[in-house]
Amino acid sequence: MADRANRRTLALAGTCGLLLSAIALLVFTWMRITAVWPIYLVIFLSGIGRSFARPAVQALSADLVPREIYSNAVAWRSSTWQFAAVFGPAVGGMLYGFAGPAAAYAVVCVFMMISIVAIAWIQHNVRPAIASEITVGESLRIGLKFVWNEPVVLAAMTLDLFAVLFGGAAALLPIFARMLSAGPEGLGILRAAPAVGSFFVGISLAHRPPFRRAGRTLFLTVAAFGVCIILFAVSRNFYLSLVLLTFSGMFDQISVVIRGTLIQIATPAHLLGRVAAVNGIFIGSSNEIGAFESGVAARLMGTVPSVIFGGTMTLVVVAIIAIASPKLRQLRELT
Image 1 (cartoon, rainbow, N blue to C red):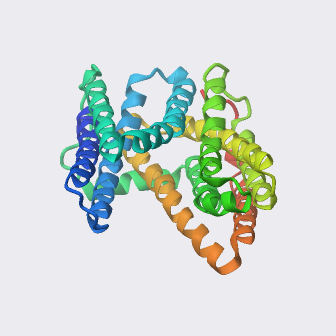
Image 2 (cartoon, one colour; image 1 turned 120 degrees about the vertical axis):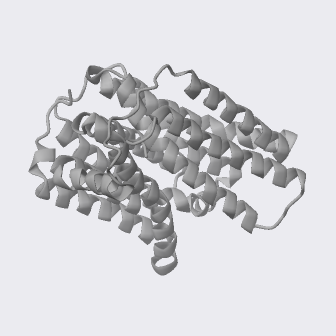
Image 3 (spheres, one colour; image 1 turned 90 degrees about the vertical axis):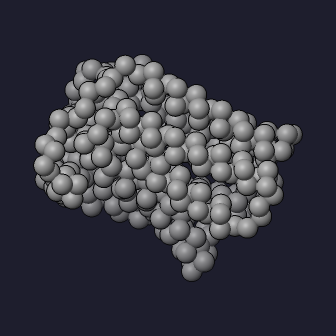
């Protein structure tokens, strides 16, 4: 849809869906609904809203930003997201604790409304050029075919897919917080650490020129992410674990910027929506599936061995894709 409809309109529609989800949770709180299934239903529907909004926003940003500063724009976009990932839950927790859940949800609704106004303010109404006779199924097939026939893009997406899939230590942080005797406050700090690292590296990347050896840097940073996960699994010192999680976020941010820039540069404008959607499936779904994999592996192997296994598999995937994709390995500056 992001390649068939007005991208700004689609982003607005998806964001409105997220607003309605927040309003529903606020209403549930007012009505004192305690059943779990309505909350699951709202989360499910909010996922649909995000699935439309994210590809539209990514494709729209490529329309708005000059090609020569794609890398800078991706770094800023990712950094602002990480900033929100750090301070959003912290502010939400404080509101919940001091003012109650209704106040927390009300603030969410207000900020979602601000987002809608901001998107509506964008002066861009160009409709993507796509033949109207092409069916949605055919349109999707074209997008998937493009990704499949672009070995560098496919390799970059696959690398990130499996890194996220196996590197899902975040799902087990409550157990590690207990092992480190960190308490709930320590758990909050541990959860924020990767986002803090990502945020500051993103700000740094936004003020530096593109990587001269982007492919090699991508493989090295994903491998370093896997090493951080392994060392975190065996650490029994809270501060060392905190540092390792922070570094994991830093390395992850570098790979995000390289991959995001690569996809925007390598993809024709009329395919950006579809490719962004495919990338969203690769990465968005792998986050949740990776958390599930971590839980199952922890149940079968134990918490620490399962995280070591995940980090090791990340290194194995890096080695396999580095051998299988020499074009990505030899990729130079992204311009």
